[in-house]
Length: 153
Image 1 (cartoon, rainbow, N blue to C red):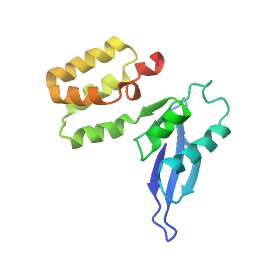
Image 2: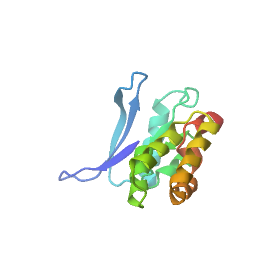
Image 3: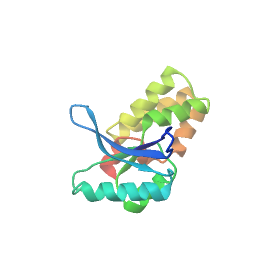
Image 4: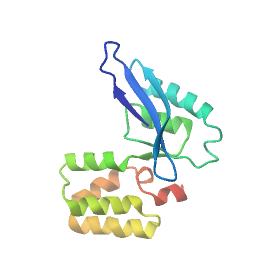
C-alpha cells in the first residue's frame, strides 16, 4: 500500500495497492486518485479493494505500508493482517542516528526471522552493538515488523 503526490495541474494523491507473486514479480492490484491522503480516503480505497479481493482473510494476505497518514488506524478498524515496510523502517532508523552496515544487517535478520528464538538472537546481537538501537526497535510495534509474528498472531 502506498500513496504519492500527483504533480499535474489537477493535483491530488495517487493511492495504490501493489502485489508480489511467488516468483517475486510485482504487479498493480488497484489504484485510485483522491483529493487528499488521509484516514477517510484510505478507508474508502481499502473498503473497495477488500470487496474486490475475495476471501482475503482466507488467503493469508498481508498488507504492507510505511505508515501513511491515517492508514495504520484504518488497518486496525478493518481488521486485516498489517506489517510495516522494513525498508522504510530502516530509513527512519538511519534518520535517528543508527547507522552502519552491521546494524542494518542485524535489523534485517531480526525482521526476516521465522522463529522467535532466531528473532531474539538477532535482537540480542543488536543490543550488544548499540543498546539505543535495541531500545528504539523494541518501541516499535513488534508484531508489525518481524516475520515470525505473522505465524503467531
